[in-house]
Structures are given as structure tokens and as C-alpha cells.
Length: 117
Length: 74
Image 1 (cartoon, one colour):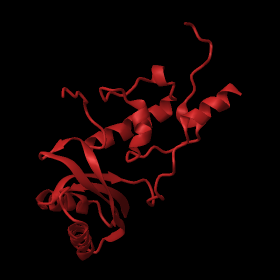
Image 2 (cartoon, chains in turn purple, green):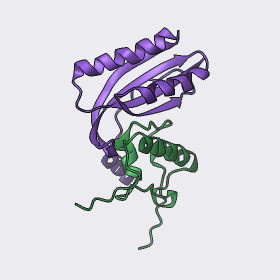
Image 3 (cartoon, chains in turn blue, cyan):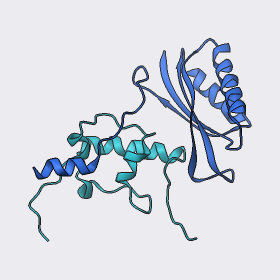
Image 4 (cartoon, chains in turn brown, orange):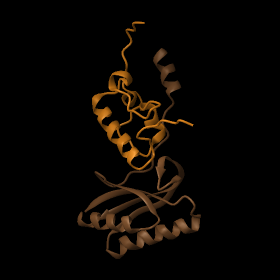
């Protein structure tokens, strides 16, 4: 049993409804193969650092899963490759259970003040 | 100008142990205008954290959160 974090980008022109439809589709694919979805949410619409399929923006969706066997990773990769709406994806194996979202980063200005004192 | 002050690791100072590739605000501190990773000798990052930082930046580049090369000619 391994935890995986998958971040994928879908077409920026989709509405919220269409995005939740895609999320449901992907979740049901995983669950149909008896693997668990820990967390699956729309993250943000962001500007891409470089154009992907001529798109300048992308809707990022974050997915945390628990796959029973690592063979499913390749199968899931194929599923994402063949999914027409997914522009780009990345699968990362996690060391342990997924952690809570990132906290705010401390300000550099405060650090400098602290150093001077 | 010669400075006697030693550079210190940003992550050690702020008690950060894990670097998330999705945290582009943090990663942006460690890349230059061209999108290149700033060397350790400039930033003063500890070697342990620098290795983690490099992994995070490369992951972010892979998923288009950070540029591989940023040259804007317009």
C-alpha cells in the first residue's frame, strides 16, 4: 500500500461544473479498481509557466490516493494519457500519509530585523 | 566589499523541514530571472536542504508551475 500525490492540469476554459464532473470521473475510475481516494479537490486556476498545448492558463486539480499495488500507477498513467481533458499530470510517491496543506511562509523582512537585534 | 557576516540557511532560520513543490512563492526566492536555480554559495542554504530544494524546483517545472527558462522578448 502506497500513498501517491497526483497533480494534474485540465483545460482552462472549463466551468466549475465541468471540472467537478472530471473530478468525479477520475475518482470513480480509481474506486472502480478498489483503490482509495484520500483527497480530491480543485486547487486553483493558474497561469502556466510555459504554454501547454497552446494554453496559457490551466486548472490545477490535486489528488491524494492510496493504491494497493504499484502496478496500478502505470495503468492510471495510461488512463490520464488517454483522457482528453488532462493537459499535464505528475504522480509523486509519498513517504507517508498525506499531510495538511502548506502553511504561510514567514516574511524575510522580519528575519532581517531579528538578525540585526 | 568584504563582509565578515556568515550567510545562514533560510530553511534553518525559519524552521522549515519539508519543501513542497506546490509552494511557488517560496521556490521563487531561489531562482533567478532566467529561471535558473541560485547556487548554494550565493544563498547559503545547507546542503541537505538544497538537495530537497532542487527536487522541489524540478518537480514544479515539470508541472508548469515554474519555468524551465524564462526569456520574455515581448
